[in-house]
Image 1 (cartoon, rainbow over the protein chains, first blue to last red):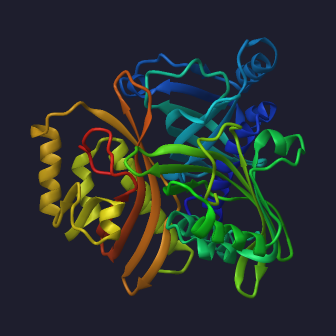
Image 2: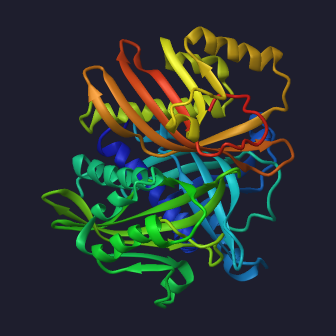
Length: 158
Length: 158
Length: 158
């Protein structure tokens, strides 16, 4: 998978499709980017670096992720907003058989109704990606963001 | 063109050259990225999704685009500003013969004289690209931006 | 090196590793991205375009860069902050034997303790890259930023 031809393009494509899914607000499809047994976490950089567990969101299975989507649609009271991901080229840090470790910087810009677009979350994805019969899937995606301060609560996945 | 080698690199290069042209303020070259019969539009996301026509800019030929450039140089009274495009990797959504459909997220940062750089426009390019004897050209480029609010008027192309 | 396969991927990788190094605050490794005889400059766009020499930082050897790192660690009094680079795909402008000229747009987002992430520096890298026995190294990297105004002084490399 480390060969810099089709393998890398597939990885880049996974990242691009993931961003497009969230920016389209197509949250029902979001868990399908992951293995059934998976991890998704949004955590401040300080806690991550000090190995402290506290996270904003922490899901340890696809089921928990589907619950979140249900929450977004049905139960979480919130003011809707648009997200727009700008994600750097993924950087492969390790590759072993069917598993790739990769990282990428991201900035998410948020637009609320009748407001200007603004920087919402800035950080780094730390990913483990598995090559499956259904294509590349995230085994884990950690969203490690730089600011401890957050503009209101994060409702949608990053 | 969907092969992930030289075809994709040519597409990436088209996107990069386009951004560099605008960020250099080299507006005379901007229409040359398009076919003679082409479409260029800057439109808010709400209108695009509801299929409402209202757009900030809407050009339906290369001639209209050249008129705009003339306007920028000669007739539009405005305070000059720098643009800086950061554009995600293009995502090919369809490819058929000599035509590619692709999309990419963008953020344009604007810098006015004696001011800090700021987020100016955030959105998505929706493109149709044609492979011609002169290389890849845009048949259409839609700039669908997330915010209905705009910091002053948009003078330069996105 | 202009072939759009492994050569371009190596260039992309150099850019990604460089960003990751700085965003991790791993400044000791930063000079190792450069040749011994090298140039590193952070300069406002106006001065660059008018060929005026005034720069924010200007180092003309790897030794001067190491001095800077020492300064960051030991002598420069400053409030620490996180950087996060988002860099566009590099655009190769020339390639000749073992040397590549390339450019890329960047935005650096800064996060200070207990503050929101904000746009810090926006501009363009103008690079000359040499293919060496140790892989690709910068012969020169110019960081040409769009705003003459800077949010406080720049302490860390861009």
